Length: 178
Image (cartoon, rainbow, N blue to C red; front, side, top):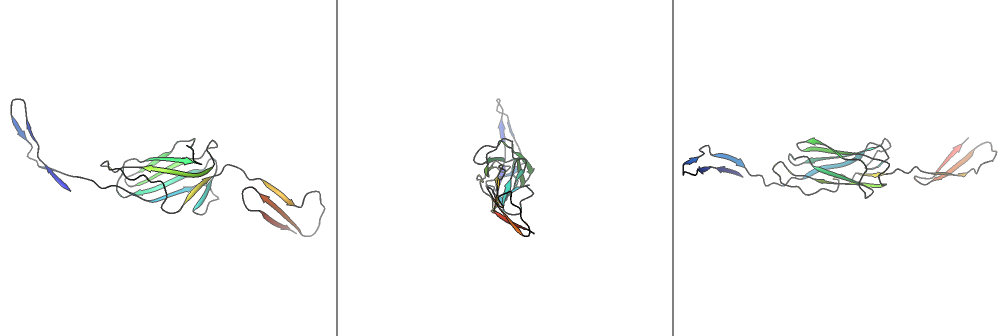
C-alpha cells in the first residue's frame, strides 16, 4: 500500500517547522519465493536428472526469485558433511546461482543444499532445501574395481571367445572377441 507522511518538528525554543512535500512511500509486506531451482554437475559423463560428480567437478545450483532479492546465503552439504571448499554465490536481481568445486576431502554421497534469502525490503523468504525439477547430484570419488570372470587367464584359445567381468561400481558386462 502507498503511505503518505508529513513531518512536523519543534525545536527546544518551541519553533515549529513542518515538511510540506507530503512524501509518499510504498510498504512491502510480500514474502519472496524461489522457482526454477535446479542442481547440476559439469561431469562430462552426465546426461540426465540424476547426475554424478567426481573430485574437481563443479556443482551448480541455479534459481529464480519472485522479485529482486539481496545476496542469498547458500550452503552445500556433501554426503551429509560440510564441503572442503567454499561456496561462490553469483547473480543479481531475481536470477541467482551458486557453485561448489568438489574436493577429495569431501564425503561421498548426495549433494544437498539450503538457500536463505530476503527481498530488498528485508522480507525473508522460506528456506529452500529442494529442487523444483527432480534433478540431483551424487558425489562419487571411489574408482571402480573390475574382476575378470572369464577367461581365467593362461588359456590358449582361437575363434570366438566371450570375456565377462563384474564391477563394484557399474553393471557387469560381456564382450565377444572374434
